[in-house]
Length: 78
Figure 1 (cartoon, one colour):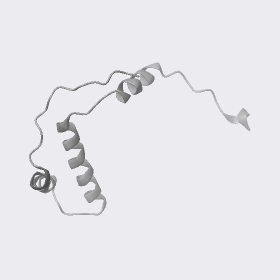
Figure 2 (cartoon, helix red, strand yellow):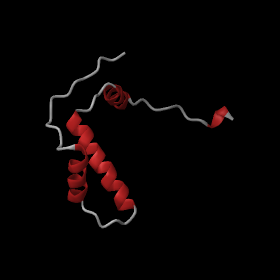
Figure 3 (spheres, one colour):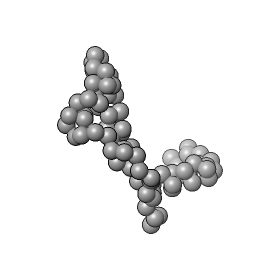
Figure 4 (cartoon, helix red, strand yellow):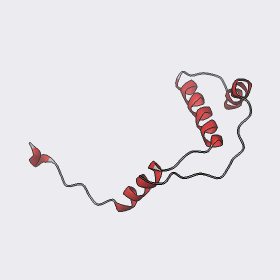
């Protein structure tokens, strides 16, 4: 059955980007934003009438204000 597979095309640019993404470390501000987007997206799947601002306000009450944006720190590739 292996005769049905096609060779994978070269994708050097994509491979470079994936390698870079593996070593990327999100800042606290980016993680906070990601959490807001996740919660808001999950609520939109359920036809909720809650706004993004309401999600942000609730997150602030629970976790405090959004961390200030700090420069990214990259992990060294293994």
